[in-house]
Image (tube, rainbow, N blue to C red; front, top):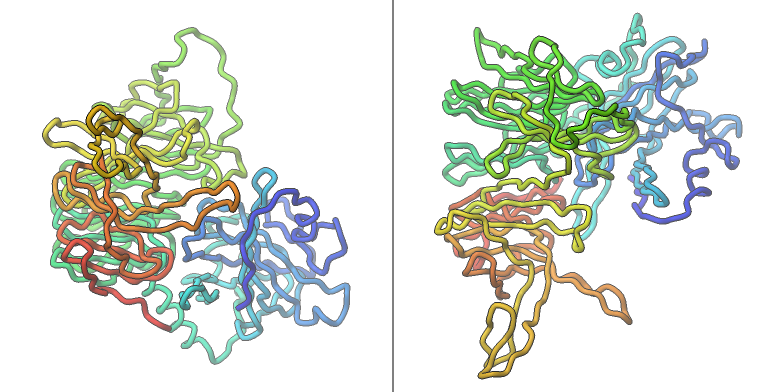
Length: 594
């Protein structure tokens, strides 16, 4: 497969014209927009639909696909067709459906192309004729199923791999995303060939060797789950063994929780939801009928669960449990931008706002697209935060504007707060707990603030992000180095946390960090990655001679308490474990060479 390198550069008007092929310059590519209910479909056209799944850690989805007519080299009038996706709701999957002239085609490439201000972001992977061919017929649908992008590790580089599988139900994407299209004839697909068995083998290898994970979760019984792509679950059991599980979905999974009985519920895109009872080894498909993204699952009393769900226009809070061999859900609250909250019966909920007590007419916000939903706790209060942005805005470029509300356990909306609060996310960090506050808009460093829980004081204590040293013979005080009556400044060498600290004691911890700097004459210095340690909860850090288990393996799995475990997330599915605090490493899970 060919590959286009991703890059960033200002002043892009000329390049945008070249890429988009919309008439700025002469081009052999026609840009084809996604269908709408008003899109005219000519008599000689059919509909091509396809889904692209990005299994890499690259944060931008593939939003263009180029297909090549069989006779593209026979005439200048015959052009490549570059289909544009629907505006991506997530960063991992894109849906296409466009009107295309009848004929025979093959896949040319997939591309990710986005513009943000004066910068553009571009990346792609190409295909050859062996990937397959397909026909488009007038007044018929051609469903190309799912195309999977996977960057296969190959030493210090990646080989771009494209694979394809059929939809479980032909035309399924059209039914969900383009309901106005009438599917009244046989749905076409790829031309048959002798490579189906080879493709399925490739798909299986991709699924079993995940490179990126959406969520990590430690259950009450000690099992540790990593939610990967293509419905794959990488699990470390309570006895330290690694195993793979899978649910019947290629959609991304984002949320997981277990209840008091040990039952587990996992959810993700398109309302996909899977349940495993404590006494069972099989996952049951209990998906929602609505096309909602499940962003958070919480455990409630009496073995019930709570779902935080949303689409572009509204968020819904669902609560329910397993009854009569199926889940029964009830909407307890819903929220829409510019419309506000509604209760279980659909009635408006009046919210006491803490911004301005004066009555004045509100202006409607243009940021009506919901980008994300989460709950948080701060100073004994529970909050729900709803991020919203403009219609064509992606969460990877902007966190949007946050609507933040104080709620109680029954989802009564107590008040709306007037400024964007900074909430700390709580994480298990070995034998302690850490709290991470993401950097605010006015942050100088852009780095999050990390705290650990001090059991003696019962409070959170900030973890420093620098190594502080004094000259030989000097004693370190709070703000300076002292020797007799001589005072000198403490030398500080700043670093950024690559992995959150992992505590092997109440205050003793290890972390993987990056040291980088800037030289006035030569520019940025080479970044160095090291394992450092602290004996006092991060007030002071020390360099060590400990080595990383492998070159690009820097992600400490902090939820594990009985050993130091490091993954190679984003690079490979290799996992290493140390039982002696990083002195030696065991290769406990190895990436398959396929």
